[in-house]
Image (cartoon, rainbow, N blue to C red; front, side):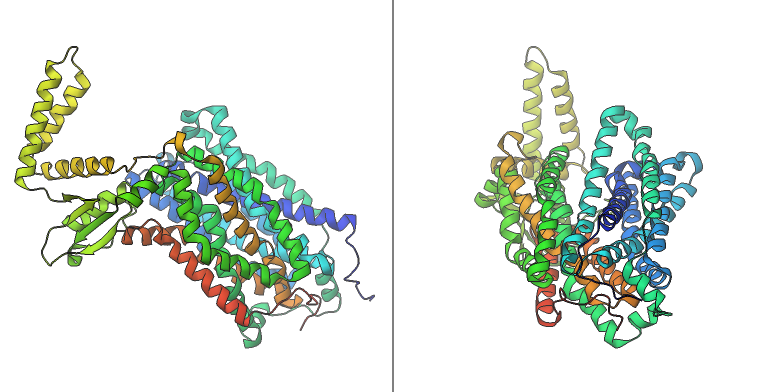
Length: 587
């Protein structure tokens, strides 16, 4: 058989095939992200047997299940890809992914078929995660094995744009459907449309993939009878390859994943939850940054063909470590300047006996906090107010300091009496006014009733005192749209996306080049999906737990900073550059 010239330019047919492969992967990510974007509605449709908070958490857990099973999909489909071929394996993955998504669109809800609805839904999510676990490794391997030797970074970087483009496409279809049918109809039945429409995308993707040829590297290896009979054993049972798998995980993909999720997901969460920016506005900011930043996937992928993959990926991790804290503080100043000014001027301090303080992460809202420390911290967390902790003598009730004001979490009887007198005076004034504001009178009467109730009066006085102190110190309840520096917010978000493109643009080529052809699909898929599915996919939950426990809204950044720092150190010391590797070698 003639020797394959790996330095020849790519033919028009191969370019078409690689474009088709990337397009199919966009559709895969579109399917995957639909669920995450519509989690709140899905919670009401399929978990309505639970309370609202628990239903939302179960919906998010079902979404997370798709991330958790991705490494298992990588192992299963990676093995098939190394044994029977790249083309047919990721044809199967897109069929599983697409059909699972379509079935979600027609699946009866909890009100129709009871507990079977969420059980089937979670099963479909698991299938989606398994399919996605097999998809990426197949697409990246397939594209790299078609690309000319000196353009692997450039061509595989197109695959790297697909997750961002799939997210963008899913958001646009959801927005279009919402606009078309209206919010009420969308919450009732319109949410199903983006899932059902995916069957058209599936048909296009399957048609395209059926027309593709097998990878030349795999075809050559198969014709020579050199395919692996036991890719799992070769990949993970032999130390010489297993150590490369481990290095690929902790020295490359773990850091890449946390930078990726910080720039595209955590930044959105931070805008809406911590900075109180309107959800629609925050989505538009992130969408704008994605449009501006996405071409840099190609730029850094192409650059990696010239200077190497490792320097660009390591630089992205290092910049994340060095700049995340100042960048997110700058984002606070640009998106909610009133909040930033208040934090600088009047720091909030919780002074409490540590033995009174429980772990604050309570995503379902079902835990009933009773100690003064927990009640105070819960109220601050509900208002997304950052605070620092100060130790009080044992047995001392907690107090909250806002600047120079001190608020008792459990108010004294004198404070309650004074509040009741003030409320009664206010009610008299409202009744004497002309015309009488009936709503204000009713609210004042309710306030007096609460102050007369021994079970409610402490909470009512504490809430009023804390709200008043925060308001006086300049803490806003939400970001003022008129004060948002829109240009600066987009610049900052674009910078975060560019860090994403630095670590993610060259990673596919580098992972492909780290492993021999006979076990490439299996070996590269596992570290990629453990890194992105576990280290990256669990970032929002982990970061939120850190913030909830420490009280500081920036402390969640320690998770991506530590992981990216680990990857930088290990990657610099132990991971070798790969751009000049002969990917047709089987040893």
